[in-house]
Image (tube, rainbow, N blue to C red; front, side, top):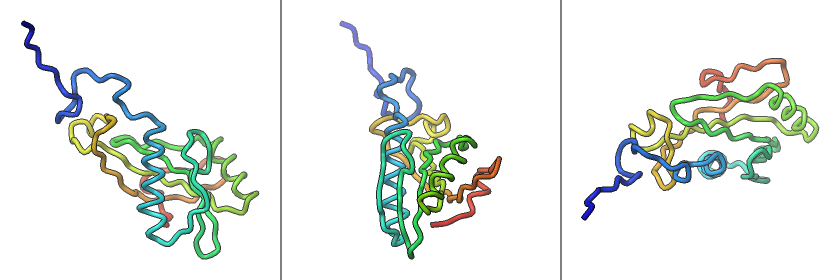
Amino acid sequence: MNNQQLESIWADGVPEKINKEDLMTIIDLNQICIRFTVERILVPRDYKIIGVIEEPNRFPNITAEKNGVKYAIVVLPEVYPRFGSVVDDFRKKFVAATKERQLIPVLCPILIRSSDSQRAEKGILLKGDLFNLAEIGQIVLNDEEEQVITPQTLNFKF
């Protein structure tokens, strides 16, 4: 009789073997972070939600309005401990498209990390896991050749 114990991937810590199917996908991350932005940031601050697109590579993710000002929002999931950036070419095209529609282009990075400290340190997000999400600020995008986007430059607040 073979008496092997199987490790649950949801046990504390980093599992030895992780199947790709058990990892959160970019689609999963986008949906979680977009919903967080709508439900925890915009709605409580009295923004009217005009539209939401959760599909990957379709922008803006959220269109919202407050006090007669309309915003086109790109939600960027940032998996702790990394902080990414936006490709300048995409940023400039997005800004141009929002100007045509008289919208203010805003980047809204959302920090997401596993509630398990060991998985969080490795940037591992498992489906079915518990997550901590945090608003880390926003930035109005511009169409200049370069725009520095770091946690320190997130100087716009909804």
